Length: 234
Image 1 (cartoon, helix red, strand yellow):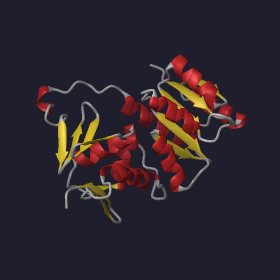
Image 2 (spheres, rainbow, N blue to C red):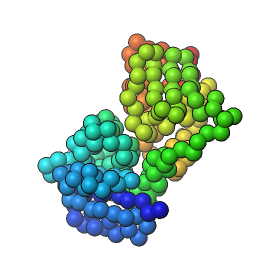
Image 3 (cartoon, one colour):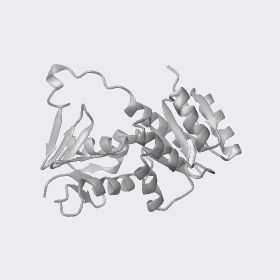
Image 4 (cartoon, rainbow, N blue to C red):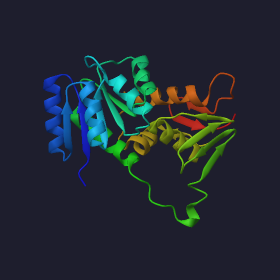
């Protein structure tokens, strides 16, 4: 089945080039120049994945993202941004984006991130009876994660996580006490290792910590320098 992409980018040259590349890659693409048209097209066509430029006139990509999430729309969203600061990337995650690519980008990286988002968005196959315990509720200290319902609680507080945040936390919870290296996490979550220079994973871990390990709670997410990350109670 052909996957559908809604592309919103105000730079005409970038929009046309990316639309052409995505089409050649086998996607069915609707390309628009601004946020207002993006929202209209998303409501009309219900695409499989959305690619949003952050900086657009009028309604920008962050606003589009916030509107969709407020409506309960969980369509995977990939942000395109020229901003390289961690705070700017976190703003996109706060708005509900699932992933981001920094401009200038290689089109192959966009393809890889879209494939990963679409894999995670695909309906899960029903679990066999013997897998019920594995695919049920995971508990680490006072953290409880319901894989089937995709809900998470720390103590009595339910946490609001994006798709990528949930997938990352679930991976750590299923391997509680085990240190997962960067390459393993990239392969399992994004399906692609973006190399030692990428800060993508560090940004998501930092953002996840803000939700899972707020001030006053015993930290559960730990960094093992030079290796990776682990979820455990100290």
